[in-house]
Length: 391
Image (cartoon, rainbow, N blue to C red; front, side, top):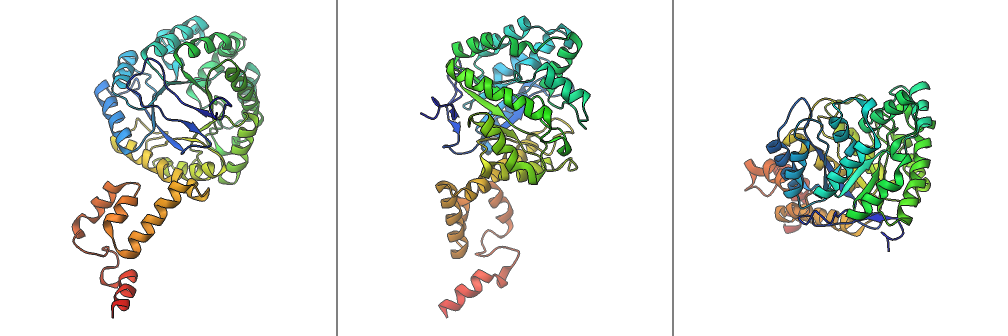
């Protein structure tokens, strides 16, 4: 019912038999996405498959392959065949690689062929920037936007439209794009090509121009039997997160909302996973369904395995914080288990409730035979009163 009414999606390409499907939407648990993928500056197929493995191990519900370097097709094939979770892509990255990186040479035909290639391989959901209009691109570039267009796919299309003086081909040929997705059961993730890349740009006319178009496209796709989710804002000050999320939800008919962060400050390179987790927790409480992680490498370099772990865990904490605020049963039950374990000084119970049991074990290793933690030791407040009751 939720899928039929456009409030949930279940990404599961017919050609990805390794996938164990799960739902994303307002009446389901908040899901976490991890981005991996090579670039022209580094990484290998082996490294990306290893990142996939660790992302899933730490709790990612989906993974996106954002490769822009060499061997894009082969990298994606290895990722798909080794992934039990849905895999997403941004097809325009490979389309641009096919034309040698020359934006002006991009065409609907090249994009269509890339879309078909990826759908046949088994990609479960694809980010497509169909809501970015020529008018929106002009607004973002020619008005007083501090950061202009920061979406990679959005910038490619914006440049193509401005150089050619034509409308977005993905919008113009949206019907044909829908046909491909229906054939392979690909879920569309309608990309936010004009998401704010600086907090001061949040909520400007260019952003809302695109959101309104995304709402229309999602409604049409649903009528044509294709699942859609909406990608949400990037850099948003904390005091604007709730209004941004609620506004997007309203204008897109409560379609599942997939957000990057939101990042609540612009000045924390190396710690963007923390800034994103703050925005993510606020976003979940306001109605976000799907969190895309940010890692300590964001804005700086490709993430390594440790960055992937930090990013996934930061997003999982954010999702849990938001779900506790919403009073969702599983989150509240986890909190109650942790509290009961701490009161009883029962470390097995605490481990059971921990979002990252391995981290608990690692921190406890040197004092694992003690019934108290190493911070308070014999002055443990819980033990003090517990012992008093025995007396």
